[in-house]
Image (cartoon, rainbow, N blue to C red; front, side, top):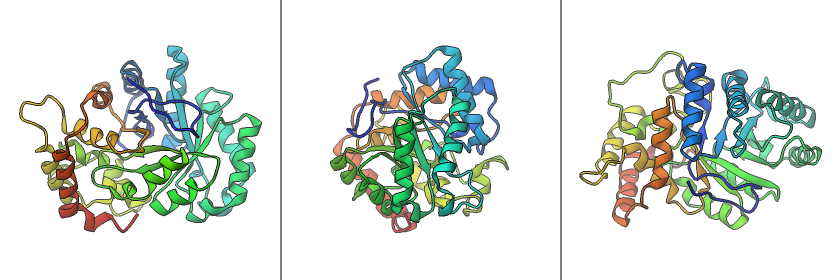
Length: 330
C-alpha cells in the first residue's frame, strides 16, 4: 500500500489505517485471538497505522496492540493513542502536565514502548483547545521524549480549526464519512494549508455504510450502537455518525446502488474510497471485528478514484436524506 504524509506529522502512514476501538470494548466481545487476527491481517495488507486509546477496554486495546507488535516483531507500524477520557470528572481542569505524564506513562507500559508515536487529546472539553497551558504541557512531553508528536481528536469542526491554528499540532482526528461531510468545507482546506494530518474516524458511520443493516437489525446490549443511540454514554455523533438509524439504513441502500453492475467491490469499500478521494485526508481508520473485515477495508485503497458522477450522487444523497440531521450540529 502506498503511504501519505503531512508536513507536521513526523512519519508517513498508510491511507487506510486500523481503528482499534473494537478490540477494547463497546462493540460486543472480541477475543484475544480474534484481535490478533485482525491486527495481523491489517499489517499483512500493508496497513502501517493503528489508532487506539487508553480508555478502550480500560487499556485492553493498547495492550493487545502492544503484545501483537512485540510477538510479531513488527517495526514499521506507527501507533497513535489518545488520552484525557480517564479524567473523572471529565473537565478542562484535569488537563495538566502531571495528568498527561501519568496517562502517557500508562500507555507506554501498555504498548511496551519508551516513546509513543502520536498522542491525541481524546475529545476534551471545548475550552481545552484554546488553553496555552495544555499545549505547553504537550510540548514538554515531546521535549522529555515521552511522545514523538501530538494531535487532537475533536467532535466539532470549530474545535478542529482552533487546534489547527496551534503550530505544533501534528494531526486532527475527526468524524468524516459520506454522512458527515461538513469537514470538507473548512477543516480539510485549513489542514492542507497548515500541513496537519487528517485522520478520518467513524468512516462507515458505525457500520451503516456497510450496507449490511436493515430496519430490524439489533446489536448486543454492551454495543454502543445499542446503549449510546441517544448520547447517554458519550457524544451521540460517535454512534451512527449522529444519523437516526432508520434514516441511515435507507440512505445506505442508495449508496450501495452506486456500485457499478458486476463490481466486486463492497459498499464499505466504496464508502472508504469516497473518503480517500477527499483532498486533505491523510488516513482513514475503519475498525474490524475479524480478519476478513480488516483485509477488505485495506483493499479499498486499491480501488480507482470515484467518478464525477458517483461523487455527485453521494452529495445528492447527503443533501436529500442526511444534511438536516447532522450538518449544523458538529
